[in-house]
Length: 289
Image (cartoon, rainbow, N blue to C red):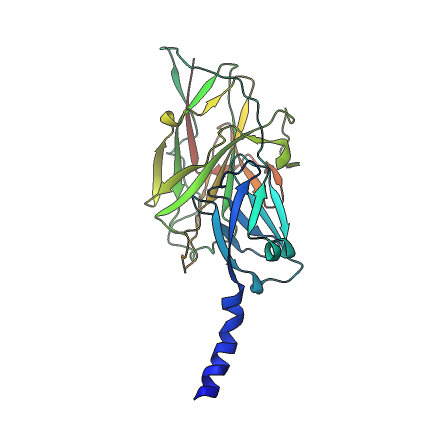
C-alpha cells in the first residue's frame, strides 16, 4: 500500500510543482489588471485578476515557449519560459499618451450611430457546435465623420449561442498618431497605436443576442483629429475556472456602414481585414456637435 501511494505522489508531483502564481506590475509599481497572457505556440491563454495576479502550470510548456502579455495602457511584453521560471513578478512598461484635456459642454450634442442591429446575422444559431475558446479577441474598426470632438455613448454586441453567456470582457479603444490612413489587408504593429481610455474597462454579457452597454458615464472622449478607432474585445478568463469559456460574436452581412472587421494578434499585429461584405455584429453610438 505504501508503495502504491508513493507512485501516486510521483505521478502528481510535476503538476503540483508546476502550478505557480505571478504578479503583473507596471514599471511605476501599479498592478496590471485584466491583462491577457497568451502562450504563442498554442491557443492557451490566461487573464490576470483585478490585482494583477495570474497562475499557470509552467511544466506543461516547453523551455522554448514564449508568453505574450497585453493590457490596457501598457506596451506589450514578451517573456520567455526562463523569465517566468526565475521571477514571480513581471513588469510591463506604461504607455504614455499625451492627450489634451477636452471638455464637452455643448447642449446641442447630436447622437450618431455606426451599425444596424436589424441587419441579418450571418451565422445561424443552433446549427454549429459550440466553438472552442481559442485566443478569444475581437477587433472592430470604425470610421467617423467630422472634425468635432466625439463622446462614446453606447455599444451593442450580439452574443452567439455558439459560445457561452454570462461572460466578462475588457473593452479597449485604440487610435494612432503614427498611422494616418490605414489600408485594408495590411498588417501594422500594435506599438504604433495607443489606448485612448487607459484604464481597464470591464463589461459583462449575461444573455445571448443583443446587449446594450452604456458608455456615456465612462467619459471616453475622441479628439477631432482622430477619424477612426479600433475597439478591441478581450474575453476575461475567471480565476480557478475549470471549464473553458468561449465568446462568439458573429458577422452581419449586407451593410454599407463605416465599419470593418479587424484583427489584433498576440505578438503585436493589428489591422483591418480586406472585406466590405461583412463585419462583426457590433453597433457603436457616439455624441458630437
